[in-house]
Image (cartoon, rainbow, N blue to C red; front, side):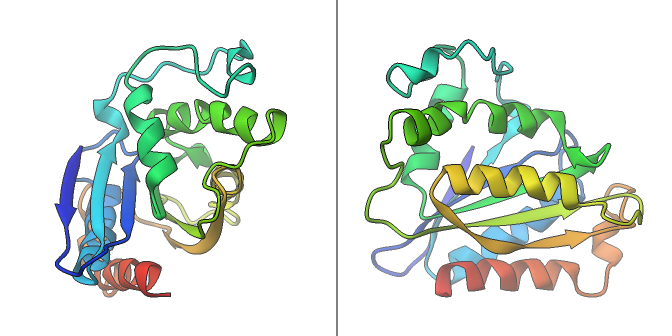
Length: 200
């Protein structure tokens, strides 16, 4: 995990999650620009790399329904408070078989603890706060509706976390590592998306 604080007083907290299994691939490059854009507007940013964490799959044991706490003790326990405290969340992932990459899907599934908190225990996740989420994705093909299954999962996550869906930044036909740098506007678009996320 890496943190960077902007210069403005009272910064918004922006958490970015890279779901890519490939270091410094297209997903990472886009997320770096989103976070740089947010930091340039005074946000306090932190990036989490799902591939670096030991996160077990959800067991569907319903243990979280007692107190809203996941019973599995692994590195996801470090992620929960960051998701609760964030003002904005940026979830970035390559598209694998029309969905999120496995590394970040495990993290999303473990947010069942938040789902239990909100829908079973009837407790708000972030009471009195307006929060937003941005989805960033890269797909190697140009299939119709390529991003829809992943987008549905991300929308469900943001809703569970009491976050408004602020939109998405998606690019199809980008596969080879680093190919996003050849796109005429992608990196600039990502930086601007990060700026808008904390300004709006």
